[in-house]
Image 1 (tube, rainbow over the protein chains, first blue to last red):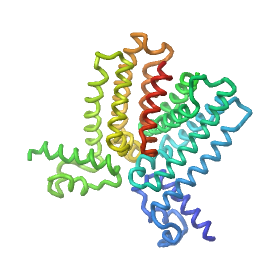
Image 2: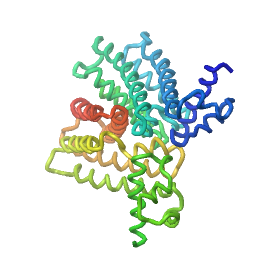
Image 3: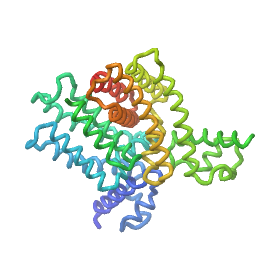
Amino acid sequence: MAKEDVRNELIESGLKLFSRSGYAATGVKDVVDETRVPKGSFYYYFDSKEAYAEEVVRKYSSKNAEARQRLLTDKSLPPLARLRNYFERGIKVNSGRNYSGGCLLGNLTQEVSDHSELVRTDLSNALGNWQRDIEAVLVEAAESGELPAYLDPKATAAYILNAWQGSILRMKAEKSARPLEMFVEMTFDHLLK
Amino acid sequence: MAKEDVRNELIESGLKLFSRSGYAATGVKDVVDETRVPKGSFYYYFDSKEAYAEEVVRKYSSKNAEARQRLLTDKSLPPLARLRNYFERGIKVNSGRNYSGGCLLGNLTQEVSDHSELVRTDLSNALGNWQRDIEAVLVEAAESGELPAYLDPKATAAYILNAWQGSILRMKAEKSARPLEMFVEMTFDHLLK
């Protein structure tokens, strides 16, 4: 395999294992065992587990940003319908996983951000990008008069993203779609009305 | 030491270590090392690390419920001012910890709820009790006409608690009070208005 392919395979393995088991419970050996990469070569590709986690966060973030931006810039729908559609799709994705795993960014923020300044910075950037994509839709909604004038798009985007993260967390505690459905109802039927 | 004192000391050690390092990264040895309890006696008090985590969750939950209920039932303030006061106190507590640690219930939900049905049930109960205390204040606010009539106290309490959990998570990523301050502003100046 080409060097870049091996590196990618290791990162994909991390996406799966960190989502399933978390950071501390995933050893470098587990990562390598998931792949066809020979044991002991991990440190040829990454300086440390921490540097590896940074790459996993960046990959997760860029994959999700792509899918998100496709939905959030779909001009066939008005801005708030687009945003609602995006979160409703999120409910389907989480239902398909039986409400397990949740969001890797949220999971790693809880587990790692106090212990690695490097990974914390990547997580902060990834959440910041996510927030900005939501803000862009809210700015459009403000321009078209859909968003109540007293709501600031930036603060509202932050609140919505954080409420979504908390609803994902609650979904994991309840093993139910209800917290996510309640999020969509409260956000779109009340907060943004 | 009396048996109950040793048990309590071990649970207090877990409150500290699980908050600081998470579940997987905290070994039984770390728990015992934090106490004056002789090594090897952990399993005399708890059947497993999982059973121990359950007790830690219950202790955290009951400690927090006490402080919360004191603030949320303080009839010297109108209901929504009381609720706002409660969350503003939460901001102070988190600032005093330099935005680290966050909420043990949130942390363990992310890390453990997919792996232990026992601990998940305790977490779900603890979050449910927390939600019900918020709901009780919102019911009072509805009765006094403070809460907009279109807001259902139960759904609103769930949304607020989940948004708070997500804001705590975001605080850990940003190492800043801003997500919590934004939560208070958006919740009390917009959602509940």
